[in-house]
Image (cartoon, rainbow, N blue to C red; front, side, top):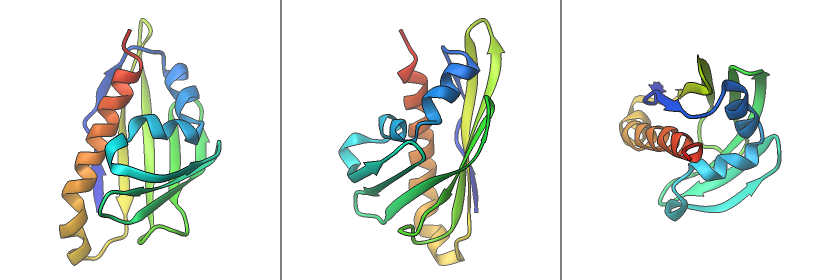
Length: 134
């Protein structure tokens, strides 16, 4: 199952956005605070529970400065997946970005998680955009 979030324009350079996101502790700022509990993080990984859902753990797998950050699911996650953050330079202190999710889920689970995950990744994209607004 693949999900791509909406692409957003960010009022920061590609490098600024990459530097912010390469610290996994900053993922917290992109999540819906009222729906996340049990947050734990260090520079390379994070783990949290989403309200009425499973615990998600993310571990940095690949950093391709300044364009992509690839994270993979950790041991606490109910199914294997990767989440890649793609950042493009747009010039004049702006960049654009989106999240790309690729998960190994069966048909039944896909019906349950596709819409909530799509909403979550779109929310995270919008929060990233807002993070760099003046």
